[in-house]
Length: 239
Image (tube, rainbow, N blue to C red; front, side):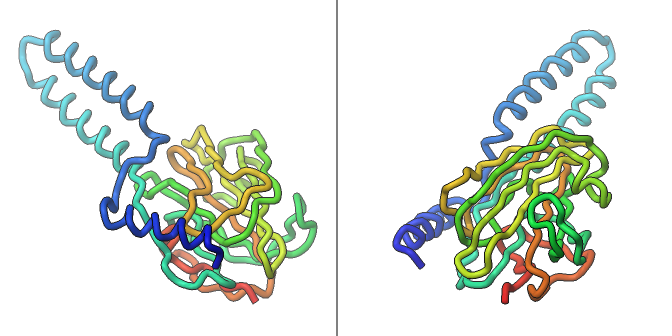
């Protein structure tokens, strides 16, 4: 493990002791704008009706909606804390919806093991790097907004593709995919930079999916339908 990596992990440990849960900065403008909007709506209802029943109904709905949005943008501080050699950790929270060998024809043009994690509205939507290495290539493709759990979403939806070169196992492909509700993919990965498990790869707003393409001889460590925890759950081991 490099000195840079050790220093970085030490900082993460210290942060983790102080604060385990925070809100992701990607939600700042959305949460502030929504709060202002809901306050205005509630004020209009409060002063626009003689009876306060409509206000209490609208106020209750507003609190619930804003609570869901706040929950969506939570960003827990997580530290893997174990040896990362040959390990692939979950890049996102959610349900494992695909484990199969596929023909990956966009970059590899050969057979790959594909593992997909679907994030619902109640999941954390921050994405983590699944392996240590360096970022070789980052691309973004516009597309449709099919439901993220559908197979065609992987190639037809709006998506960002990140190629990570590992020290011992060649290239790994990670793909952030927008869903039927998601309308913005944020990717922090930059070509030419080193990347490590424990670092954020990006963020997808409001319902989405992350695919990862591994060598076909990788050992799968999860099952279909299993709930994965980003940066914690080992989804595969590289041979």
